[in-house]
Amino acid sequence: MSIKLRGVSTRDEIIAILSEENPDKISEILDEAYKVKIENIGSKVYLRGLIELSNICIKNCLYCGIRLDNKNVHRYELSEKQVLDGAEFALKAGYGSLVLQAGERTSPKYTSYVTDLVKKIKLISDGKLGITLSLGEQTIETYREWFEAGAHRYLLRIESSDPKLYSKIHPNNNLHSWKRRVQAIKDLITTGYQTGTGVMIGLPYQTVENLADDLLFIKNIGVHMVGMGPYLKHSETPLGQLGVNSTNLSMTLKMVAALRLLMPRINIAATTAMQVLDSFGRERAILAGANIIMPNMTITEVREDYQIYENKPGINDDADLSKSKLEENLSKMGIEIGWNEWGDSRAFQG
Ligand code: SAH
Ligand code: SF4
Image 1: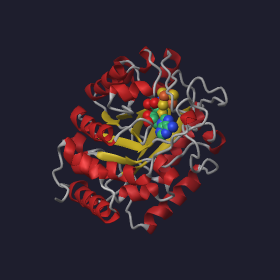
Image 2: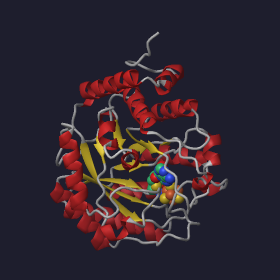
Image 3: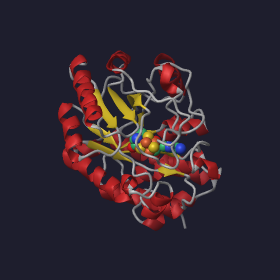
């Protein structure tokens, strides 16, 4: 019996896709997902310049290189000028949008710093730059404040939709509660953000069934965007010390394709972690149904300090070089870029 691709909806159908090992059949799955993308949202790739605002974090996720307890990390926070320079770069480069990402912090001083940054980015870009935030779990009031300041998208991965697996990859305390994270995703949707979530693929203890359930979770919670990527080990973390690094690009590509078949109109990011497994990893994800890329614009001086996983690509590059390398890769593969466009999720526009 052949695998169901178009109109895939059940757990068993998703498991069948993710379990496929035959290279020809995998190509068929990826090609079909690409076709579904073109039919529903077109072929363009939209860019969001990524600024890694700070690696200071109050949390201790067991997999992450910048977790609080990793004392080998040199901590930094970008100044207002450094962030606004980044925004100027994004504007000139034609990126259309930027993403501010950081470790998690909730102090009033920090949350108002972010509010100010968002307002100023809007101001200097004459409202032209779209702003996505990826700053962890916050109160609904903070989410509202940032939304009103001008941010309109937010990324908060659930990491794993299985509370049991979640508890194996996080410390077991209130700061790392699965339920709290789900609530935060719902709060973001309620606040009016285009909301994105996602998971890590290839985590220790993770099964194909877990991954199928992840995709169903993403569909059921009703997000508009997804960023999923391979789990990559970082030796200075408790999970990294287990030494497991089972991720392969093929499973990641099957996940992207299955998600596109399940949710034809959402935005799906080809994430940087994919590039670690294959220098064309992101471009291959685009050909499997993804439609967003987040080129790194972080200033070279601090790139090395923002290593959530090992072997992060391009840590010696600057924003210009990241841009030209990406453009070259995309054009080699005949992929068109939506310059100066926001590229909002069609799932959000209804
Ligand atoms: N602090 C914020 C945003 C920065 S971390 C947050 O946690 O939401 C952004 C993402 O990096 C996380 O959601 C996680 O999925 C990913 N990440 C962290 N460590 C990783 C690792 N070792 N391998 C792959 N992805 C990782
Ligand atoms: Fe902090 Fe995010 Fe890393 Fe967790 S994943 S330790 S919240 S930066």
